[in-house]
Amino acid sequence: MIDDGFPTSIESKGDGIKSLAALGLLKNKAISASASIVAIEEPESHLHPGAIHQIKEIIDALAGEN
Image (cartoon, rainbow, N blue to C red; front, side, top):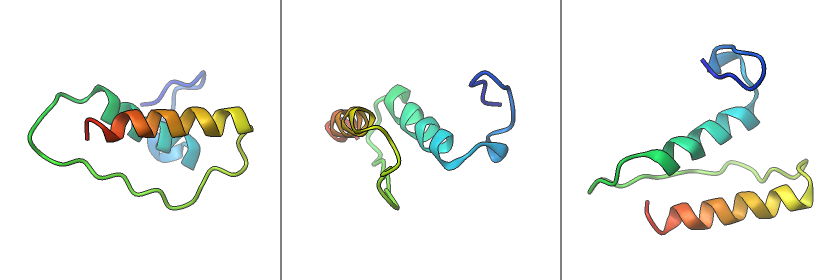
């Protein structure tokens, strides 16, 4: 279940919420010897420019650990 103000199954959420959930799981996973791979299908071009820069910063930070 994902509670973004309306608790529902992740299967019923949009692509944006699913993407954020995936980034959150990577950010909070335990450090391990295994590799983590994230494939970005398309840029979130509909986002506010400030939000795009925030996502880039998060991905850059995750890249150092994953």
